[in-house]
Amino acid sequence: MKERIIIDCDPGQDDAINLLLALSSPDELDVIGITTVAGNVPLQLTERNARMMCDLAGRSDVPVFAGCSHPMVRPLKTAENVHGKTGIDGAELFEPRQPLESRHAVDFIIDTLLDADDAAITLVPTGPLTNIATAFHRNPSVIAKIKRIVLMGGAMREGGNTTPSAEFNIFVDPQAAGIVFSCGRPIIAMGLDVTHQVLATAGRIARIKALRNRAARATAGMLEFFSRHDSTKYGADGAPLHDPCTVALLLKPGLFSGKHCNIAIETQSPLTLGHTAVDFWGVSGRPKNADWIYAVDADGFYELLTGRLARFSDR
Image (cartoon, one colour):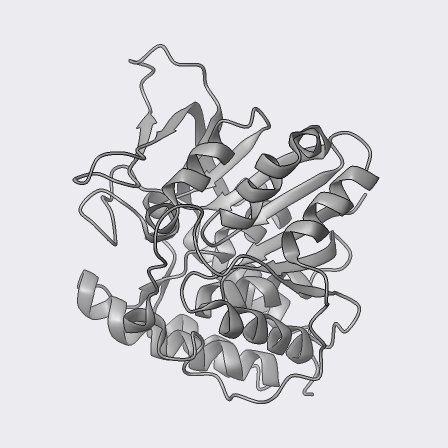
């Protein structure tokens, strides 16, 4: 049976590649909507970039909605230094044919969940959690409709990539993250501990480029751009490919290992704002609220990604 999902994102090269992975997999995933939020770049770029990926995938059936243009409490912090001024530098840009839906993303999330059975829809957030938390705050009754939340965000053993202890998505809107992690529904969290293991090495990019379809060329170009910054930052052969870990887990959960634990979000401290306090050893006594993913078969991950990108025709 297909898993019904809403992807909430802020493309960003890695979000864009995650969309292509999901849109290449209609036998397993029913992508009922893509919602965008301000994060890696401002909202007017994240919604455009999402629509471009729908065009590349030939998936005009998947609607795209623009959501919140700034975090719930704090000013917006973006990451053009990593992703370039467009968010998807490295891809060939074009004006998307896919229209932007008129409804606000938060309204779409609320309406879709209210119309669903209990525990029927999976949320896949790969950016700041502003849209999701706003929906929960506005209409708490939607929470019961969620099957699970598979998100990219947080850090434990790897430390932060934005501050010494905070990962970007959580740091941008820690108040939203606090709401989501305390919602009571099953959560699977893909933090830097696992995403830093799926490096876009030159060899892996070359295999994607060899596919020669338009979506694969865009993916290879984005990975090459993305790797310029992160290879230098981390001293590694290639950038971590964060967001596609979420959809990869939905498609092939056996690639990943995790542990059920408590995750709490720091929302006050100026020193550790946005920190994900992962109680890996159960020392706090707080109730377990999430699965923290900490290991992945990286070769298997790239085999999955490359195989799914090969499904696209040259459009």
